[in-house]
Amino acid sequence: MTLADRVSTHHEVRRAEHTTIRYTASGPVGGPTLLLIHGWACSRSDFDGVTRHLPAGQRVLAVDLAEHGASRSVREVWTMEEFAHDVAAVLAAESVSTAVVAGHSLGGAVAVEVARLLPEVVTQVVALDALTFLPLFPAMDEERAEATMRGYRTDFATAVRRAVEDGSPAGTDPERVTAYYEKMVAVRQPAGTRALEGLVRWDMDAALRATRQPITVFSVRALLAQEAVDRYRDRLTIVPVDLGSHHFPVEAPEATAELLVSVVG
Image (cartoon, rainbow, N blue to C red; front, side, top):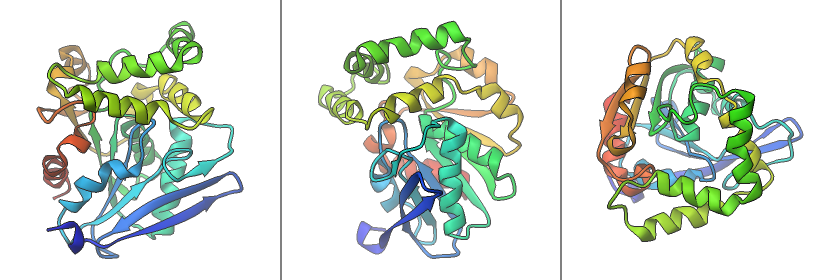
């Protein structure tokens, strides 16, 4: 199908007095729902290319997390659990009874928390190059968490540049690396840094123990450590892919859509 075949509409939902979440909906109301969550310092527009390649009968909701993209918030809490409440508000506004939730990078952590929050609604979780980064997971002790965040607090631009480069395998187009860096370094503050801290302090192992739904992880082969596969093989279905960098949903949208359909279908 072409982009013209899939009509997208833009919506917003208000959470209490502190947060307005904006999202895009496409596909038939009442169709099987796939909800897409972007990564840290990114936005729902990262999934525009993916969405145009999904089946016409698929209902797709793409969410901007608080203080990302067009969503805004003045709240004080920036945990993965709080982001999950943002997503839950969208599902409630859309009267969704069942959904597959897919998240890229930090969005994968949020997707797990949405599944934990809404066990009767979320049937499966899909993580796009998420949940397998051992420098972040399992949960850090206070000393390591502080050391990780210190670099972002003292020289945010350099820390972001390093993170983007770490997610770019050999052969990645340097112009792409620069484009990702320029987008991510412009994340709204102070929420951007605090959201990253929420990820650093997230206890993934505890979240996985509390989540019953199946979780499929599509990981960039060049970035996937065997130690992560060995550690989580009993809980996660980890599928290595060769579709580009950490941001492969942007670089290979059609192939990413095929991966999602393989799970949703």
